[in-house]
Length: 397
Image (cartoon, rainbow, N blue to C red; front, side):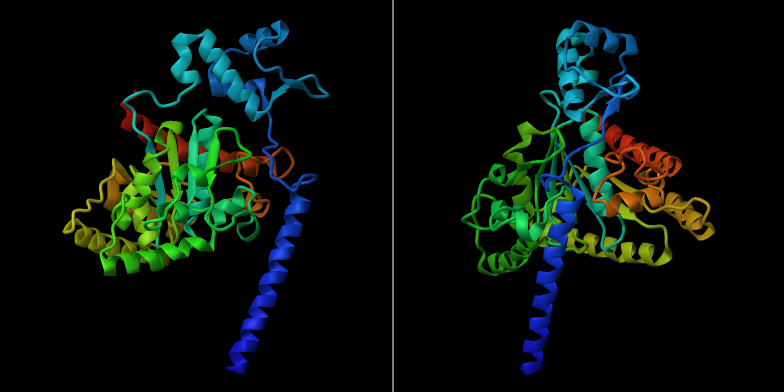
């Protein structure tokens, strides 16, 4: 007992010390307010590519004082914040209604909310990295995005500048909205983020309570308005569906009740996999377990159905022979269910992670330009394929 008490005291000391250091680090990373901000700006050339409008149109708007007015750099180049890009989309969509869908691509009546769930059994498969990059990409493209962190480790929450043990209190995670009987509204746990167009339901260790509660509810045959565990998250998200175009769910690396709720809520299921034999073998065990659980749940009326299932190769080094063999194997076995694009292994991605940023947030000089450009092109290609699936689900060309 004494040894246990001593160990517990040490763990407590480690926890306090590390939490305080992480809080101090955030203050240094995000001065002066200690709050994360989207610092990257967009040039007129960026906007020409994003909005598909000629540079002359943007110049005329500035000269006429119409729409958001950009700042001027020392070299006299015009730059826009992401908030201004969003405002410009709305302005142009109003004055050019024939291009409104391209400029402001929010989903239209009859186009259902798309729920993208990133999942795998093994940690290190880049679920969270894929989720954060997809969220930022979609926001820059003009969509309304809801991120839901279902992982008690709360890595996605941390990447949005929130420290789970300090910034996310009791009843402020998805658990508060999907627990049994006394659940809160889903809207009450949604927060705005520092990125225009992106909201988040943060995570922390409280999410583990859903595992214990569900076991008790199943044993006692407990029911409420949200139904069984696999229905609860979907029904909760449905409460706020009209406010968003796409929801992105980041699941823990297991097949617990929370993960299963995330899978049953998905319209698009993305299984991330690092092309190494141990990772592929682990993914196979995950798929076997998922199949067996889905078959068991189907006997009780729960059908696991998505519009699309895709495998995303992550941390890919194309010049690596063994990796090339595994990628080829996956394409042979799963055919069109493997994304054509892969997320490349890159020092730029690693550097961005250390700064708690995505590639879309990096500013010039933070990483070598060629490394950043190559990694960003890779991530853009992956996310463009995901967006194409979303458009197909909506019936858009």
